[in-house]
Length: 612
Image 1 (cartoon, rainbow, N blue to C red):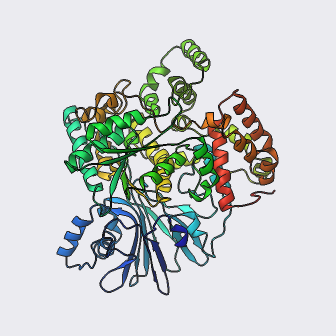
Image 2 (image 1 turned 180 degrees about the vertical axis):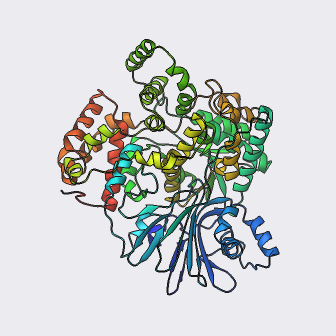
């Protein structure tokens, strides 16, 4: 099992076993490289712990625990877990600031305690078998256990088509679940696993605080979050896209480090409208960083797609996965840790979806004739040559307006409707057992939670689904496939909680997204960066599938091959391919999603997947 995780921990391995538990770990050495081997035990060997990730406040925790009489033998962050468990029990997780998935085994109490970080930066899969609980960081590790079988989860497949990723607690393999972010799992030998929430994204807007005070608080907390994430015994670098969030992290790191030179890393494309490297260079010059950049093209995408089943644990439709892996591999030549801007868009309303929630009430008051005319005009807009052009965004927004929240938000983010999924799945699949409606997960996760207004509810939905289900797994699997650790200062839980206290009107101000964050950064970043429209990490997949990747597309999705696998309707996939290649429609996302899924299937479920 640990051999399957060698890419996540290339620096060593460790094991513990007794009559009730076997625990193994692959180590990526970042803190206490000399004595930080895992698993780690307490002084008497009665409590053991293994950690994937980082505990950023381990020094403060260590000091408090030593005052209470606990003795430490290492200088690493993992040992804090065994003593915190002794002192606080299951409540120990409340005291942790970090990104983590960890296991604690108490031999005296005969209890296993698993926990996952609050926002979902580190993965944790588990399955209850007749032989006991099996858990790990990736599906491939679980499948090495003789009690775990690889069988496709049709409900998760439907969710993959609906969300463009597999949201927790589902996984694409039957009977294997993902522990949701902010949750723990407790189990005793012979018992059943008990899953419980210990933290959630909350909103309590404080309207007594002035805008200028909010600006100061945001900047102060973000700088503190960056400072914590700079601690390492290995070289640290920075992913820099030239967007507001990654630029803010780089600028604040430069301020924290004083005169120390930063190393920044960017990736770009030759296609106009997709390449952001000019903005990244601008920020790098602004802070005096040593900037490194590379490019990614269709040839790179084709090569990596062929082996992508070995790169990710579950498929993601997001086309940025492969260039993120290429960027991680590029950065790993010089550093072992990078900081990123992940989470800023979700917490401070950076996506166009938030503009819909802000202005929807006004749109609903407009005359129907005006709305109908607007819809016809949007439908006639030409397709953009670049990424995220206004016409593309307007079409997405118009599509989303046809649905109530939270379904509207999901439609804006992507995925296939129930009708589109019904056409794509094969008759054998739907006749044997209709998959559970994936959108039921929205109601289950969002019901009774989130904020009071539309924007707060949308933030909650973005955090629970889009961030935890797509963006964070994208970065984790792409980077850890190279043995690179990525840290996200915006996801410090103190930062998340601060953002939850900021009124919505300071996040979307008129047509300005991330208003309060941008205002906090004035004077720290160039005006050109703060004034940019949100672009995102776009990849010219649609263009490549009509050009250099067309042969691969038509080969992988040829009717005979699709029919042999048996999951998707061959006539529908052929129509989608033909329409896209001819330029009659843009089916890039669904076609890319099918290609990525097929690469994953060949790795995890080779051969035919389904027969009635």
